[in-house]
Image (cartoon, rainbow, N blue to C red; front, side, top):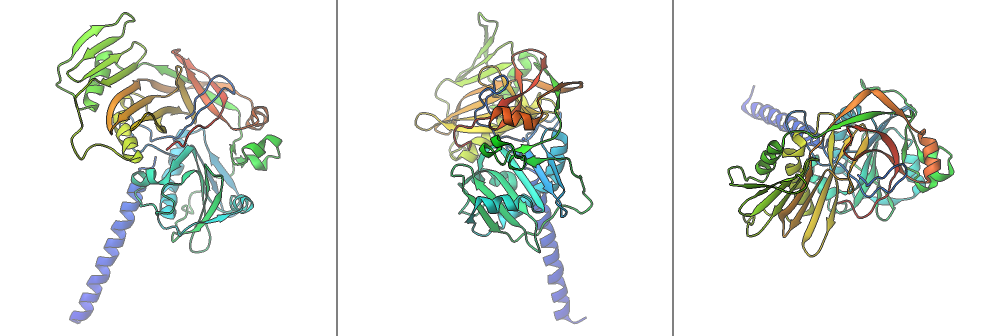
Length: 433
């Protein structure tokens, strides 16, 4: 073989290796995209919700802060399979489809506004549909998806996204969750679901397909068959010392001297040089910065995404270590307070429902001021399914008619060991990210 041919063959080999590495990296990084509202008993109010990666059993790792609450697969024959209440199946389906979404977003052309009729028509095509609990800005998803979002959609809040398969390239459809406008965009991706994966039909449908009058209020809510949902067992995990150690470690305060005291309500308080930590008997732990301490230059989170990621890491290293393998802990919303103050909340999810804790509902709430964490409220809980006991709820079509709008599965945690499933009315306040 001539020298020039050897060089050409070598160059082809290098190119193939580079492309293979690129594909592997994309697949690995997109799998980091691994399930809120405020609820009161049946059809109470529900305020804002998104969601985040479940903790790996025994590791305390939350792989990402947002994952779709529901996924729908439509095959070439129009057969539709929806996943919403089975967390294990939903995670499995996402492992097969998350890279399809990531690659479509990362290679999309500039979107054009389309009619709602075109959006509804698209939903009947072969493809994959993702629904988040609350709107999330694409710019926030960058690090979790492992792709760089195009500038023209980075700040658009999305809740429902559909990747339609077609020809050699897929087409992306989505709804602006604030304006209600619909968009379509061509992509440079032809990634599909493996042909060997065939989940079959399970009767899932969109609300507008049911013919129920109330569906016009929430036409794209996913309606699932079945009406039984499991009870959930809740316990307070770890001793107060173990909870204290987890919080000290998460805030890099291990080794700091603390002065313990006991409050009149039985809560234990630990005072440090620049902080205090209060641990209540019900598992609620509060951390407060009491003065002086500042994060080093270059480590202060400034963007929404950085504050959410900082919160995710704190949650993973504290309540995430104790929540149980069947539980997801997900980003719900970020709210601006006075000046440069922001609060980020995460919630507990299990069996496709949100656990509403005490009065406020969230699992964790981290407050930033000037980019520094000044307060953290963390509620330690361990949840597990009681598979032998199920509650029979109103079928979803009837619940839709009764609610007159969107609703969700909820488990109200007021301190009892057994949590009963119920439907609650869904409501969204704010941008959710």
